[in-house]
Image 1 (cartoon, rainbow, N blue to C red):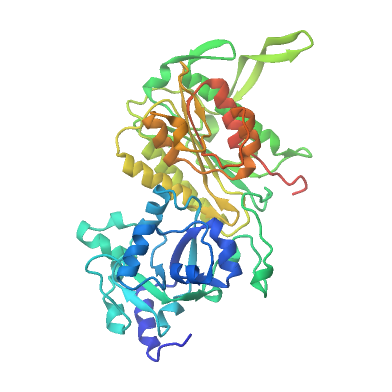
Image 2 (cartoon, helix red, strand yellow):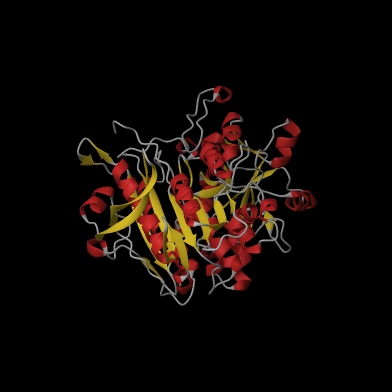
Length: 481
């Protein structure tokens, strides 16, 4: 692959704008094939070579537009990690666990590379292979975090592209070794690693973020452990119990090991960190800090199995989360925003480690308000697009109700939701779970399936919420680390 004689002029422009990486999004399921083939082929070259793309990023319309402009034999890379078409592909179900491949800008200097000032298939796109064509790219625009940060007229230029003829070799994909798959000298002998299998250790921890609806509707009463109480109280007790379980799993040889970072976010009109007592105002806290700083202890009733059958006994419970139901609105978008900020910082420390990916569990009793569904979908897609070497962030959305209704948990397809439009929204907002979750899900659903389930529930009661919380907080703890 020959290099342009004037490549230094291209490099001077990149240096001026501080551009050190290009990006290409794909699905995690495609990584094995990319490594085995020694790099990225265009979709048309894949067809010609009989290479099956498990999760194609582009749809049929995109391919038709490529053919119309004779671009079907080009691999396309961009200047942004937050490509709008990645979220379109998520919304349309073509990809479910996106990963971002980091590309060496050296591909810009290749003789056959082309430059487009926007999505190359869009009307008005300026495409060419000269330095002057490269200069037409709006570099100040492509460096914004998202296209929403630009004026409407400037947004199309956020999607400027570099088009590489036929094939992008593996050597230009600078982070291809960061997904837990060793890169052998002979790619056909690849030893694959399944995602979501990393051991949780002190050197490779994971994170849990609990989002809890504190709107006024959570005052509605429900039954929990034989007691009538507001849903806010029942949810607080269940979340506190789950946090305590996580802490107990970290106690080894009389020490509390730092296997997880745990955050608690409440939301109503605003979103806020919901720890109480000594931890008030904190974001992520460690299991040791939780053990040493309980907010309070309460006496509750709990069903216990004895030789005489199931009996209700009084037990002492540790609390960190206080029941609240004083929010005038259900601004879950603010909670998702707070969670995104937390994970941005967490990923800076752990993005390239073999860490089990963070889990977010959102518990709510009703539909969100104060924003649009499109905005919520963009937020949840951005969360689900975050990843460690071991897998993508997992987002659970659990709708609870005191009165039953047509309960659906961990559906495989939207068909299971019938006419429940809110349930279909939650379906699109939630993660597609790896098959390692199938057995505990089968225990809850009462059926067996080899298909992957979506991390959501609608019309769940309190006993179901407990089961879902157990499934949502798995721990692959390495006993000696």
